[in-house]
Image (cartoon, rainbow, N blue to C red; front, top):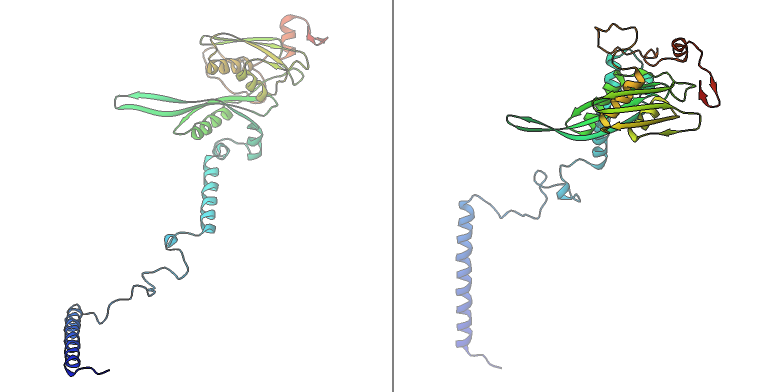
Length: 289
């Protein structure tokens, strides 16, 4: 096959023209690169120690703590919250009791009431939490406390501290029930407590049941008359068991209630009742005479 000389000359001319155009374009790009003071285009796929994370690491987790570090941080926070939120640590600084004795006093701790309360001010409403807690050791020591805070936990902590500070001794007949019949009134709530024979159990309202359980009373019946507000019922029950706001042997002018701790001067004992009646109290046929 023969190719004409004209066709070969035409093809070579077009090739030279295309090479010249490419060279001019390359020269322009090189001038632009030289103007920007770049010797070559950066390779974005290469590894840069200062800009890129380590090879094989997830770029979304760069700079974040490891799982072990997170667990250690959470453990330290939990220990700090437990130490700061434990009411016994604060009580041990103010009361002359050991930590073991304070733990025994709070063996039976029941948050009876937790609710949200509001304080109306000129600038608006201030919301907070309220808690009423009863504490006892199940052996005659019992107390109730109230507290307010930003959260339920803070309110319960403050109420527990007050309950331990307001603890008093309850004298029990055979370490299971009260002596005779007791009546107490707080506000419009009237509470009647009656002693019961062994094995009778606690047949009373739920809040009185928790107070009796914390005090170590196992046989008791109670009747709540008129208002059944749980706050007033609890206070009336403690007032009857502790002897009220004016203990015996206290002057009438001094109305401040003094805790008797484990002395038990609030509720009258069997000997005191026997001296007042002029005859000794005798336990016969599961009844007190």
